[in-house]
Image 1 (tube, rainbow, N blue to C red):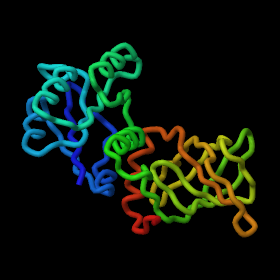
Image 2: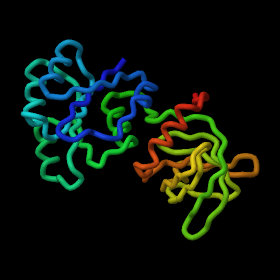
Image 3: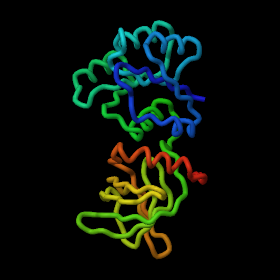
Image 4: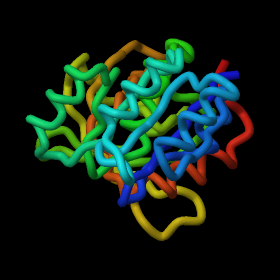
Length: 226
């Protein structure tokens, strides 16, 4: 089982989902200082750290230096502000495995952490569902039928044929929610399916305010795709 430790600074790191990591057989913990994080790693090696760039009484650079000194081998992902390009470059030069930009979201965090943990090729568990939705390409709307979904995208069927790399706007209503989910995605697969077309859509932009409702819905679905 992989162990992830969040080391928060003066601001909380948002967008983390314990349920999504548990589905990948990962344990998610939190430390309030770099010293506490080092103590946790010394007692039981951590596989990946998610660290604020400015820690109470220290910096991410100092944390990484101390981690190496005590034999830690976990990947360190550092959270910086969206426009902090110079700071990001400094951290990567100091040994950070990756940079995460604020405002953070669950989709980006999960993808990056899973990549550095080496947790499977599939970043997101897909669940079998049946939902009617609306697809939009250019100025044209058309009905689609979603047949499986994950935090990374959906598979849907439609009478309209779409081509790979085509951009689609997807609008759907989750059962029990009064708010429509609107996401922008790219077609990554297209194939004929009994008189209709089956398409794989990878999310390119899933607004962070839609993430909690999506996560709650998917955790209630009991039929993951094998």
